[in-house]
Length: 106
Image (tube, rainbow, N blue to C red; front, side, top):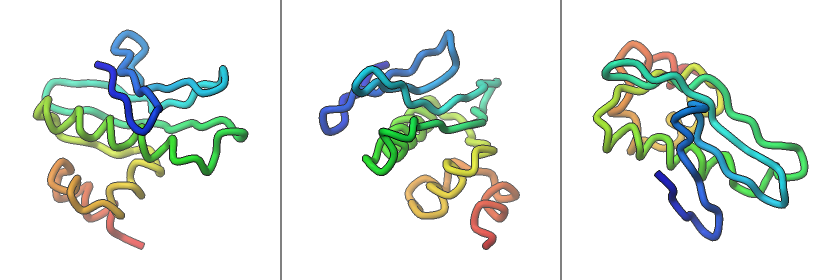
């Protein structure tokens, strides 16, 4: 699954278990583990030269949209994905009530 978002193509590398993009030869990604009925987002990484360009947000949107169309519950262990869900209420229904309480806690 490849998705082009504002000139940035995000790819779901199922073999590597990550959503990734490459800009100027640098790779940004969200690592995940997929289980029956759920997807665990473990880590987001954006190289320092690419920070502040919205890449992590584009990765998160793609990853969460994938979870929705795949009917997967989201377990946001990654602090970035957890924070992203807290700020984007349209994705909260993907998270179990117990995990959502943790996501929304200050």
